[in-house]
Image (cartoon, rainbow over all chains, first blue to last red; front, side):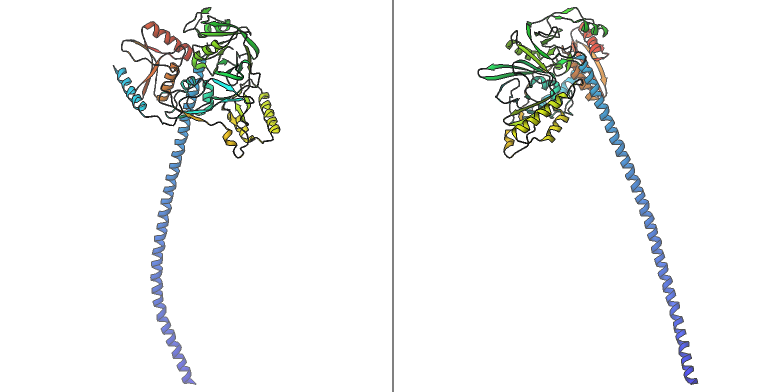
Length: 100
Length: 415
């Protein structure tokens, strides 16, 4: 009975010892993975930030372009309005000149 | 010298444009004034299109085809009257619905600004039609039944008190009477109407045909009044109506022709037109395209628009629009004499916009009597120059006319 207990105790101790060694390796692996993933995450964050910045810049540019286009349209409409007005004014004066 | 060099460039450009061969499939002629009226028909003439050439203006096109500027302008919305684009296609409204009144003698439709002269040609009814200028809102042309009481070749214009007063206010006093000649606004021929003080006459301002610019008289192009004068006699009946909405039929197709009604006109005429259309629809048993009727009323382009609902095979009954060849020369187009270094000129304006300058020059050119004007461009300065004139007196007279008629402060340019 005592012998059996001893064997069991030794097996448990061995198991604990072997298990302890595996946990340390795993930890190092995990740490390495963590480092790598962290670096990847940092990179992704940086990339995302850069992408957001680029998108923001693009949006800004697009907005500026849209504003410029709107301004160009407004100016063209204004030119057209002025041209129409001038033509109407000229026509009105012409019509008056056709009276006796 | 610099003036001559600019003109040289313009002349070369003109030669280049004119050297392009015209398309070969175009028709050369179209009926403008004289038509026979088939029984049961109310529509005469055909629509046509023409491609504009460099330096054309709509008033020049209008006069050549015996149309008023009002109808050419209404038929071609969005086209600049004075500076249209070279190559623009212009619709010539040479189709007309006859006014809804007795077809005898002279019939004048004020809204369409058009005169119709009906007469029997054998067993057929013939009609000659001409565009007209009419009275302003303040001094409108009277409507009703009247007749010709007197025909006068080279009439003297006895200036009415109201016109004398208008001119005095403008700083342009008129004599009590103006003898025949280029300054006489009656032109060379006049038909005196039984309604005292009202005449059908020619004009020294042909570009006014199609405008409300008279004091109640009826003006025609000089070439048109000459023909009317030669073919009418004293006692010819004259009926004056105001029908902006004309409804008629030709070859079984129903048409509506809409002219912008005068401000002072009510809605009665439109109601009458709708009633007439409904009556036609009921009698014929064929539905009308009421959407097209509404569009025609809204657009008011002054051309007959078919409003019969399209049935298989009925498209052939609608008169086709023809494409016309541009004439080599437009009748009555103002001619501009060559520049001379030893002449007087009047500088009418210096403008930065070339279109504005071209428009002003065109307007000056179309005054009556004509004042020759052209644009001399240098960089972004476009000078509108009237002339040449033989002496300072001529130049001063023109400067005065520019001031009174067009509110332009011209500057005399010595030789």
